[in-house]
Image 1 (tube, one colour):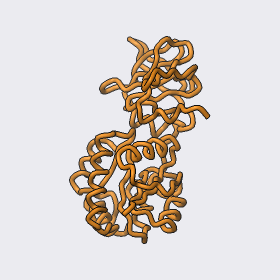
Image 2 (cartoon, one colour):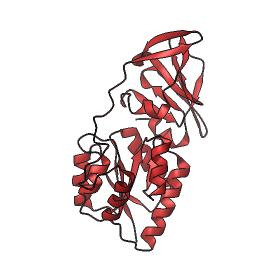
Image 3 (tube, one colour):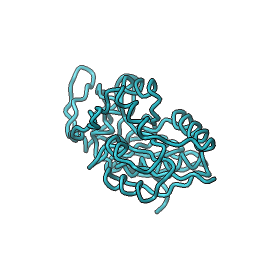
Image 4 (tube, helix red, strand yellow):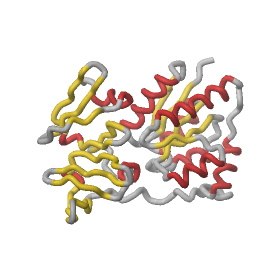
Length: 260
């Protein structure tokens, strides 16, 4: 029996990337809809009744947790999150299904394998069981109020970048790209190549999604500084304006640079 799914995330490139990876891992899964905010996600789930829903935890209007606790349609819920490792350990311990931003293929494959087993066995999804697990974690109170119902992070405008023994003030709009560098994040801008302590995952939630593209698990690129896209067989690389460096685009993100 064909299984159906819906993707709810306020970042278009994230929805597209997840759709593409799901198609590769589970070709028979039919994506019947998507949503870019909490209220529209809830409405579409109730109308379309998908077997599975991928819910971004941070969405405008309603969080993914609020959408989950409001559902009446029986559906298997998978949360999409940029939480830190401590929070993810709690998800693991309580058997709450999740995938991580930026997408981790290994984690997604694990979740897909579990969903295949559950749907093949005809296991009925239970929101009550999910809410009970989240209450144990302290994420949802018995009254249903989510501890994540806080304002979205303030958009980042300025960075304090360490360059040698100096601290440079760099406007986010002037950054060519960010690159994960162990415990730090490398910042490349005009006349600046330095480090900040903010992780790439934390940065993702504070940058304008229309300006920056997640081209690789370890790279965020400002689309204003993309000079050209080079293709050589299965290899896709970005040429940055005024920079000889070429940045590789992961296979999962090739769709971002298809001809219009």
